[in-house]
Amino acid sequence: MKLKNKIIFLIPAKNEERNIKNVLIKFKKYGKVIVVNDHSIDNTLKIAKQFSHKVLNMKGLSGYDAALKFGLRHIINNIPGNYVITIDADGEHSHIFVSKLINKIKNKSLVIGNRLKYNRWSEYFCGFLSLFFFSIKDPLSGMKCYNLNYLRKNKKRVLEKLNPKIDQCGMFFFKIYNLKEITNVNIKTNNSNKPSSIGSGILINLKIIKFFFNAIF
Image (cartoon, rainbow, N blue to C red; front, side, top):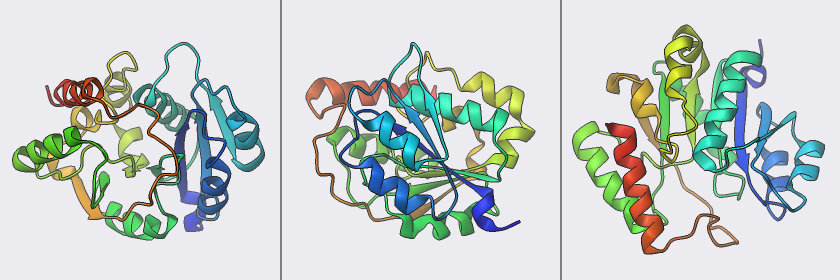
C-alpha cells in the first residue's frame, strides 16, 4: 500500500474561507483530507466539499476540541488508514513536516509537533509545566500524528476518553496514552493572516490553563 493511502489529515474548520482551499490543496497530495466543519457561516463548507475527500458537519456541540474528538471518532470507526495527522485550517502548519512526523510515528503511538513560538502566554505556561512533569514540550500544538493502529487496538477505552463534553483544547491525549508512547519533533509554523478564532485575552488564557488541568487530571 502506498504511503499516501495510509495517511489521513484531520482539519477542524470554522469560518476559514480565506485559507482552507490552499491548505486542502497542499495536504491532499500526501493523503486523505477530512474536514470537520464547525458550524461555519461563510463559504468554508462549500470550499471543503470541493477540495477535500470528505466533510463532517458538527451537530450540537461546537469548538476546536469537540471538532477534533468528533473527527477522530469518525475516522477510528469508518475510515481505513494507518496514521491521522491533525492540522489547523488557517495555514499555520506546513506540509513539509509530514514525512518527519511519519518517520517518528513508526515506533510510537503519538508524535507532537513542537512549535518554535506560541500564540499566548498561557501556552508558554502550560508548555513549561508539561515539559517539566511529562517531557512534552508543546501539548497545545495543533499538529499531531496519531497511530491509528493503536487507537483501534484500544478502541473501547479510547472512545470513552474522547468525551466531547469535556474541553481539553486538544490535550485529551494525556488521557489516552502512556508517556512512553509519546514523542516530539520540532516544526516551524507559518504566520496567520487573521486573528485567532478563540482570541488571546486574559479570559482565554485562563481557560486554556483550565483545559490543561482538565486534561492531566
